[in-house]
Image (cartoon, rainbow, N blue to C red; front, side, top):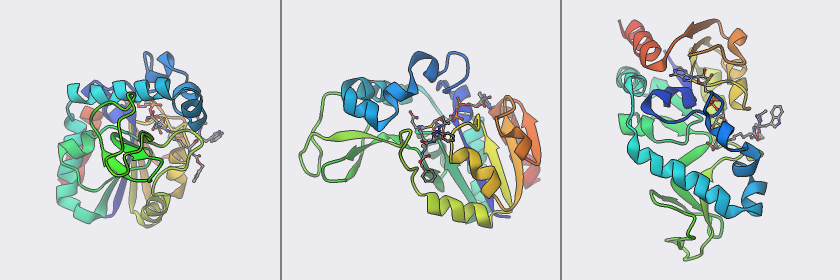
Length: 225
Ligand code: BV8
């Protein structure tokens, strides 16, 4: 069975990473148009860099949870028949052991040089304008897909959705496109695992409610039983 799993901030919530839209979420403290658009970066790069430096630093305080680990068990059973497509910019899937993970909105622990177009694994801050290890320039920006920018690897995702037997959406509110449209691109069966109904809950054949650390291991156990 070929499965595509889409994950959002909800899968990392129980690891201690703030989601975007839930109460006390990231977008309560920050206007996304002020910190997550290319225009915002042009207007005030310091503000944007500090926003992402803080989130990058926060990664050292969190660990993958039972939901991330359950997907690693599923990958061990399915191999290349499982693809995890994540909207998350954290690295908790990889730290849990997932290999087949595609970040459509980029990664916090990556810096992109807009002078030489190289990308570099990056764990430290960017606000102090460090030099690009490749060209020496000081034009490193967060390797993040902001609003108005094209998500990464849409061809790969579209192909996987057209060929999948099952599409499962975990911990996402379903309000940001194109990710919110994937349920319509999926050829196979569809299942949502979420704490609350997402904006697209009605578009899924089945929708289960609850915390990811319970729903995802239960679903994987069921599948592998
Ligand atoms: C694009 C990186 C063209 C940054 C992000 C009008 C209509 C339709 C679309 C648009 C429109 N106007 C503009 C657009 C396009 C825009 C968009 O969709 N805007 C929205 C706001 C209307 N989209 C874009 O600009 C995209 N680019 O369209 O380019 C194109 C299109 C197609 C093909 C080619 C080109 C780029 C969007 C990417 C922006 N960057 N992130 C950063 O991280 O700082 S988006 C960001 O928000 C996330 O990555 C994610 O994608 C999105 C939503 O966040 P979620 O992950 O869902 O988190 P949220 O907090 O919202 O929800 C959490 C959920 O988890 C909740 O449902 C909750 O119940 C649940 N939950 C909580 N705890 C738990 C849990 N579930 C289980 N267990 C728990 N414990």
